[in-house]
Image (cartoon, rainbow, N blue to C red; front, side, top):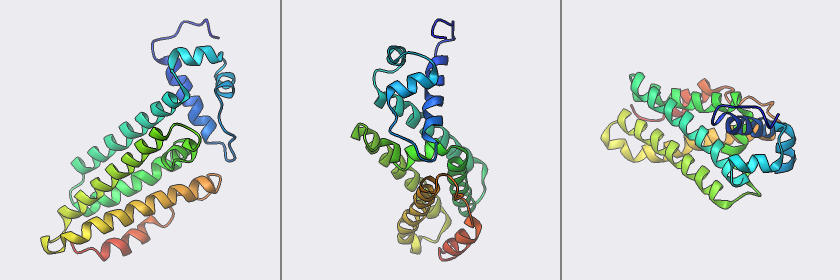
Length: 195
């Protein structure tokens, strides 16, 4: 298997996909490079030809998450007419992303990063901050300037709801759907926000 000719980046992508698949096991063990190499069907040395460290592998997953989420957020804000609809679409997308990518959810909540380099958790924290900033921007655009001070706490609350739902999903062994009753919840939360 190791000797097969591959396009540049193909093995790297296979390694990241395998890592993500290992992370979506309901009760995962700490992922070692030996276990990852065995699952990919290569030697540990082959892993290190593509990534200098396990932290760099997690950084690859985080880059994928960032590109995907912020690409979708950009599309939502460009294609959705009202700021309130943008907020609803962004929240639904964040929860659907988790449902479709359980392993990535463990990265998003930092669960998979516990015994890894602390810079990875800082990067996830920055990703959360960027999402909250985007929600805050949408909320600011949707309300009367007299109520602008409410946008920041509401954006924070909505971000907390998303992260909480991600946690419940991961901690339930990926059984409890992250998007359950989202429409009802948003109707109540956004009704409190002056349009």
